[in-house]
Amino acid sequence: MSQTPISPLAFEVRRYDRERFVTTLFIPEDKRDAVLVLYAFNAEVARIKSLVREPLAGAIRLQWWRDAVNRERPQSEVANHPIASPLTRMLDSGQVPTNLLLDMVDAKERDLNNQPFNSLAEMVTYADATAGNLGTAALHALGVTDEINLNAARGACIAYALTGLARSVGAHLSQGWMSLPHDLLSECGIDPAHVSAKSDLAKPVRRLTEQAETILSIARKARVVKAALPVCLHGTLAQGHGALLKKSGWDPFDAALAKPHPMPIRLAWHSWLGRF
Image (cartoon, rainbow, N blue to C red; front, side, top):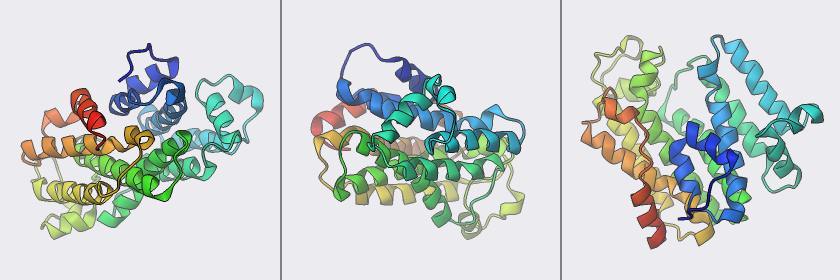
């Protein structure tokens, strides 16, 4: 893991997405900023919901990023933006497919209205469109474009997103959003319309975590190239978060789940072993 001083972009990612930031330290220095641009873009889009009071204001911000990705914002406006400027240069070079980032922005629209997930399959689709596309874009930025490695990274990132959603159920509920899929709640005998902080959500949280574990186990069957490993390390984070959830008794209201857990030693060990 490099000890070289990090770039300004890295400070942005470290501030808002500390776990992903730690995975970038395993990327060779000359390629790291390309991935940091993508992770900084993701952090900016993801935190829009927390910055606005009304969904319309959030939609306007998302549209700004949609326009920037499509290269439809004024050049003078984008040139002065610390994230949009290097991001559009990357897109102009063809290094990263534009559609991956547009799909991420579109998927984030649902967050603004606390739109519920009707099914577990719908939640997996959301995780794929957000974290899955981000991981795929990161591999493209690293020059890895073969199907085996792309699928492995996508699976690891989806698993990471699902465990993140499982850990955030309590926080989401405090914001008025029941983010557990309705079909999981119903299967566990819980009425989706009457969930509160007093509800026993251990069963659906465990079921969601098990879905993440299943997706991760499939991804781990692939033998990935060294260049793809830093992105695939999201699978290591997902496994660690699954262990934290189990330790909590699958209780989404456990305060320990809300804290970032970048797991640098575990990531370093897995990186040295060439696994995720």
